[in-house]
Length: 412
Image 1 (cartoon, rainbow, N blue to C red):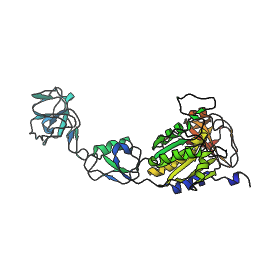
Image 2: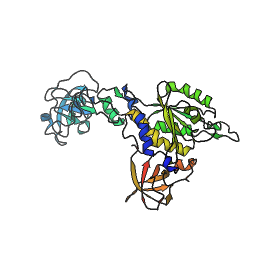
Image 3: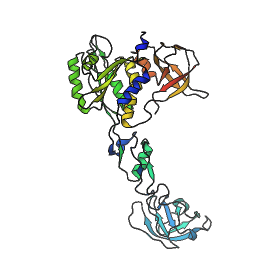
Image 4: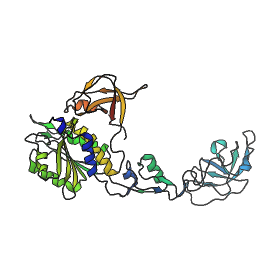
């Protein structure tokens, strides 16, 4: 049996993960906390917008027929009988032949049929000269012309963005029922790992993976808890992991899942019998693990230790799971097409994820491979804004060929 025939397919592995992931229970949350999350139910407006007829301008409330003939050469003179500011609770009524000074957003007095902007007047206090005739109904915002009481202002499944937050706040909705953001504990393993900012020994390296993955978790809309790297000792790893489960909806580890003698994650979790380790037909990211741990059956992803492998694995497997937990669809990023600028090769039987820089252009988008093929090369990963996805049966792609691309910085 060839090596590739024993590998699990990318789509098969993702489907297995998503089949075991459950959406988090929904509850009502403060409005700003729901940004980026989908609504679980329709939201009905409890009131109309505007709530009452109000002025769209600073100016003078008038009866239209009183000023219908006003011109700069023959202005209409009216006594000013009052002033209405925004937020004023007193209800005004006005009579024909008078004017009421009014501010933007202030309620329209009974009897008013138009508002004359202040720039079309002499800005008078006791009396005012109307120098230009308005249209009937001009600059009056009518109650309910924007939203009517009972309208659906947010539909089930719609993602709450800044504009919808503004609308919901406008109709007085301060809490929305959504699924919460998953709490994701991110752990790295390796006795050689040191936190950035600390002094390096001759045989140590900085722990980039936990920072990379914690940042990716946040970009996916979840809550990240980064844990300092644990040494290559199974008991220490299990102890640290157990301590973290109290605040975890998901655990993501990196490193320690290959075939080496110090692959402590695989060694420690294999004994539980609840985490499956496998090799997936992809490059980078072949060694993968997924299962559940603890009394609450908390999902755990064990990703490979090389940073590019770890990041690609997150995008392909972890991010879709987090989106399902939040109720966000689609789960996986859709692919776009682009012309590749140089020839690339791929290993037969593996789905290749190459780093690339995507540029939309007139006449067709292009993507340029960046960095080398090594799964440890962070410089190329940082320059990339896309992954070039080559199918398992592709071994060579010539320059100028059309290829599928996963955009990393674009909303799903």
